[in-house]
Image (cartoon, rainbow, N blue to C red; front, top):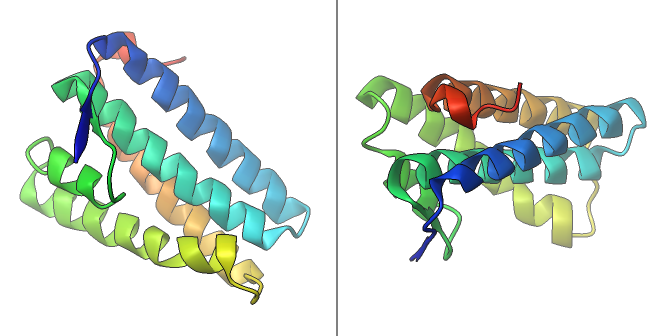
Length: 135
């Protein structure tokens, strides 16, 4: 399911949210708040993909988070898409455990999630038009 967004300029807001969540994930690791690091990394990746789809397609996924993958498929080369797919689904596989389950995430989980989110945000920034970047 997708939600139409008329203003492609809003993509920079999604990118800002992605970068802020990534910054909070790094802080959470330093503070040993590993569940929060994973949660923030997941939300960073979700917002990054929203930035890209809003910029290119004037819409974003509004159903299952994996719907965003279908939207970005044509934006990346097949190899880049497969890498993005693997990283994003790996992050999503940690979402439920980090947010809703009683077991705690560990440092390794947090480090991996931040690494995947950094890669996704980096790839998205490479694809965004210069006027979409918050630099």
